[in-house]
Length: 304
Image: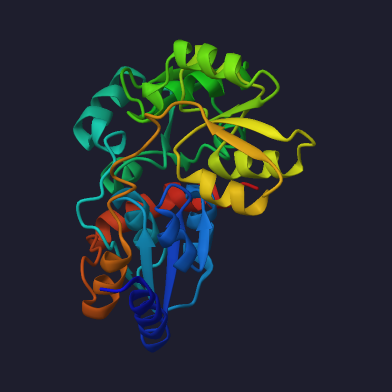
């Protein structure tokens, strides 16, 4: 189908079905362009909880659409690409978390939003990369079992020194884990005046080499406000679309050409169109499971 035709049809169907399109910052540029709201997982979680549309089309990966459904049970939530998953979210399941909880009975369980509904259901509170530090600081316990991202756990432990952070061993974002210190050395030599901005899902040695560490939205905001004109970006390539549009006078360099999440790139305009046209790939969660998972998300959303 012709791209212009698809965009026109998506806009028509959106009005006809009272739908809202949410897109993560890592989505393809053309998918970001047709979305009503583009943001990181925290911004989109808040949006999903507040909107009054009957249908939410979530251009992201499965755990994001599930979170929207948990927060909005009376809305129809569609995931345009049914195969768009997250290896990080899939690296721990309910049984594994229960085993970890038994090993650390005094610890509060904090799950990164990049986790399944089942894991959220047996966690005390959820967090995102934007608010992880605030979430941990809000907990009145000395021990925190943090799952599943080991690098984000390490980052939080550096910021919240009065609590013992127990990470889930081996959990990491496969996209951010591809960055090497050699990548850093090479691009800093090529662009010596550029500030390096990275996501907390990268390893500690990469974070220690950066001028700024933050979520995708925080990275976007930092670059917009910074007086600097050149930036090395250490997160998924999708953020460059908005950064370049917002700052045409600035230059952005991707830290590594391997910073591409194949799952985030699965969703196409055709998928969005077909999902709306046929109400395809709807998210369903058993109510008993949804209620359990709702508590961890609502606690997170109450933290400013």
